[in-house]
Image (cartoon, rainbow, N blue to C red; front, top):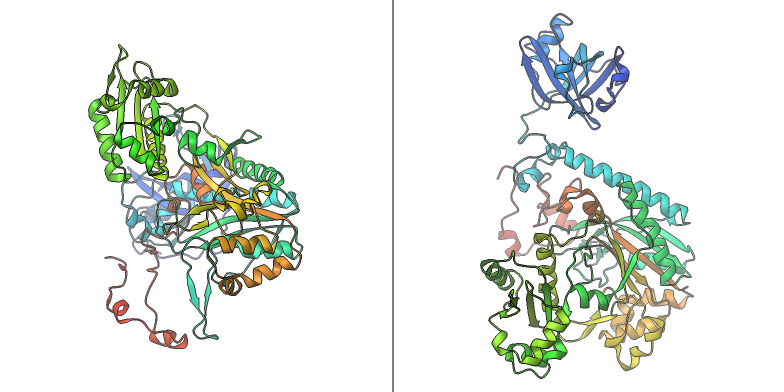
Length: 611
């Protein structure tokens, strides 16, 4: 075989003896066989150096003409991402060529035999740690992207978390049980993905948004403790922390109250984090939903940020300041974010914050007060505030020279959301963050119901959450005040998952459906099988579901779920690597007795490869 032909070799009898990262000084003088991809090739005056990369790392291999003229000639034809197998002897590098940044940087492999296993087209971007390339290109060429160290590390971390979670739940007596992927459509907060049935024309399965109902049925069936690393599907708009298909660590257990479930969650959360090298202190801190909203403005606060909100609603209930009084009269709130020692924020920066609130957060504006060095107030709103109101603001916010106070007077959800976002942004910008790298907490005692856009009561999390025993009577007298047995796990301001105790009594579950406006016939049609199961002797039970992709994203330090999923979708729900979704043949539609509407048929399919 000539070097110019560079014909492909079969592996023959050669088999890998070591991974690249295993080539260490301990192997000096030994013969090894390694294989991988060509990261880069360098020709230094007759000696060719190749960095060979596999899943475990990278090692330098050397082709010298005096050792093997044939191998040296072949090495000159190697290109990036060619697949190569070499046999050679491990040697120490000379002191001046040691690479301290590389785990294998003290040694190299002097090649005696080389076999080209496959050529490769030029990669669309460098297979390196940091690259400047748009995400669409990375997703279209995902196979190359997955070879890069960040994604390799993220998927290894994900694997370690999988194993740790499985071990911890198994040690706690849970059984891993699979539940169906083809199920019945039930309301769970997002649109279902529907699958038409060929055998039952006109009928549809739904891909599971979660195994919620199935795991409750397993408790009724007497399995006591169940878990599953489950694939779930929700047809919803995409964000950086959402995907159409995602993974949950799903679990359920019987004959328990909230405390027993939280004990399990501590063990599992700590185990999964430990697999990623993160140690969590126990017991986990707890916050009620109401306290979280009052102090931080959301139910998943990053409590490392040393800024808290102050409620001033009652101070403006009879105010002459119309902007604040009107919000209170409409049932809204007046709330303040005090930022002390805030001289670093200029008037121009405050104006930009106000523009951001209006444009990006949907707010009506951003009222503010700056306390000057002499104690006077610089503010567009100060002249509208009475002495008593100014005194309340000073006392409750602990305002002092250098303080900057931001206000929102609006509907509660919007006001809290805006100030919560400012709290995080300003806390990070001004360095008001504790040096604790990880902060985990439970958020408990959520409301059972919330008002929908139509003004009717609907479930806050899902329709099977049990109310607190102390609030059962409120289902008849004041259901909007009832609290649920719901709980969340929050890590560094990110909700890792949520769960609750479930209604194990059919009468309570039926009453909740009534409160949400379901007619008796609709309840029986959609949930009759579940209600019948509860009537069959359901034990008290509760569970939880971790958003596994999000959990891995936080621990890996990534900003997008797409960086911890091997083959993710774009924000438009497209798989650019495999060109999905795609049109199907008319014969397939005919088998399912489906027709494409004229409007859909006339629309352009999604972008194809190369477009």
